[in-house]
Image 1: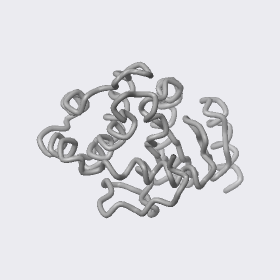
Image 2: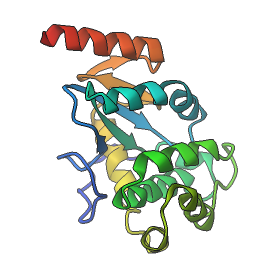
Image 3: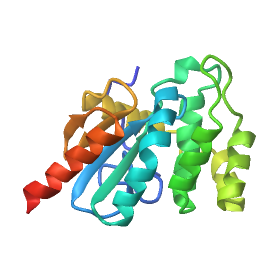
Image 4: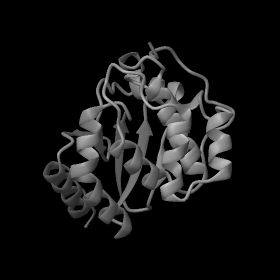
Length: 192
């Protein structure tokens, strides 16, 4: 569906990488790319199990973590939930609360096959993490609605065919906490 080239949106979220297809957290030497979909139950499990470890690695400046919120599973909802949730995460990035929003959206993940959360429900999830007025306006105005298809097309061009997908310094690693930690340690060791 998104395999064709997508033009870079004119307006991308704050904190994106140079390619405009991911939100960058941290500035450590080891690069981790995490391709996620807010509709994906395995992505929620990945965040619940590996998220705290990744957060610590970002905080201790061991990694640079780039999240690529995809619209891979739009067809698993009746209202393009993957696209809308990913676009809302872009609004959260604009408000400086991307990671906090990511966690709360996954904690409130709707089942596959249904309508997904409404825009108003996505907005309401921003309140407990400190996202208010401008966030609500960003979601309602669909400021980043063209960003998830771009992220998804770029991921497809990189041969990402499932979520979650994790790359450590460009090398595919199974999205398991222990395996990611081992790959990061090896990459740090190789750097001396």
